Amino acid sequence: MGSGTGAAGGGWSRRRFVGALAGAAAITALPAPAPPKGTPDAEPAAAATTPRPSAKPSTPHPAPRKSGPRPLYIGTYTSVQGGGRGVGLATYDPTSGRVTGAGTLTGVPDPSYLAAHPDGRTLYAVDERDDGAVTAVRLADRKVLGSRATGGAGPCHLSVHPSGRWLLSANYGSGSVAVHPIDGSGALGKRADLVVHSDPKPGPGQQGPHAHQFITSPDGGHVLAVDLGTDTVYTYRLDERTGRLTEVAQAHTRPGAGPRHLTFHPGGRHAYLANEVDDTIAVCAYDPSSGRLTIGAPQSTGSGPGTNYPAQILVTRNGSYAFLANRGDNTLARYAVEGDGARLRLLGTVPVSGDFPRQIAFSPDGGLLFAANQKSGTVSVFHVDDNSGELRLAGAPFASPVAVCALPL
Picture 1 (cartoon, rainbow, N blue to C red):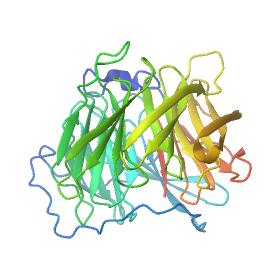
Picture 2 (picture 1 turned 30 degrees about the vertical axis):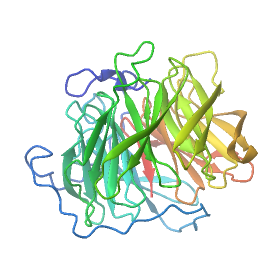
Picture 3 (picture 1 turned 90 degrees about the horizontal axis):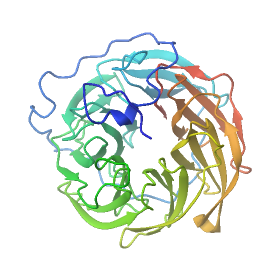
Picture 4 (picture 1 turned 30 degrees about the horizontal axis):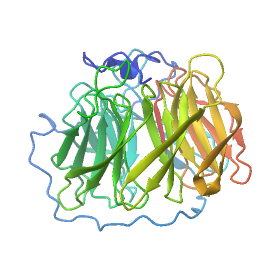
């Protein structure tokens, strides 16, 4: 399930009900400029006089491996006991996988999920609180560019549209998705749209909708929102001129599945859905022309007999293998991808060397996999073999308070 104790009070505490206690290794604070005073949407809308050009998604191709240390940003909760003080700063060696701490970016409350602009100049973080917001940080000098209200409670996920002009965020507590414009400096403008998931009704055991993810399809033609509370994946068209959303399709899991995270195969015709409540994954067919997703039969996560909540699934750049983070079982499940993305075959599991892997991410070249382990307060790093799908631990995990998101650049 999500995770638990509410930040500033409230009804979305289920998001953080597990894993509030973390490893004790805090990193040194490096103060950053404080965000502008006032409520997130009190300032005028950011001018979009210099928008970045629209970028169409392209066929994936291997990225060159970069030498020398690369930046790693770590999301945390700042409002729980043992939590961090902001966004964790670190570097990693792309060859060895070794992580070295570099301090903390303060001034961002409860930054539990992070994303970078396609041009690499701006970092975005959710402020996962009852009064939810999203914050932009300029990476060149770590200046906080300001925050904007998401219009909902407990935002838990965000992503940047491939055009670089829109930020998409999901409000877990209130079951809604939001769109904010991004101007030429990377700063966020006033919210362009907010859609609450009011249909269908909540699934078994749920009190309301719980939007958990909001992403763009590989073809760039649609944006998809995964809602755990309504057992539904919603497909929208995004008006790239106004930022307005129009719903075009819904895909429903079996009742009580609790879908959490969707990842597309590089071919663009299939996706994989992690269902955290019933501990399953499913292969989905995707039609780029209509945006319609068709969810297949549930499959095993490879977890043992204990309680397990699958969190996130990744697919290698060549589309041959997939990896699933299992919270509770504390493993990474390995799958062979077959039939041009149409099938997943479970190969086995690998211990994550941490407790409660909340999120996983590849390095840009795909050679490393990072796992943020919430309850142990660590980040595990694995070498990824594209040819065999093997994972090999790259030394001892890196300690970071309540590590819930790792973003390697």
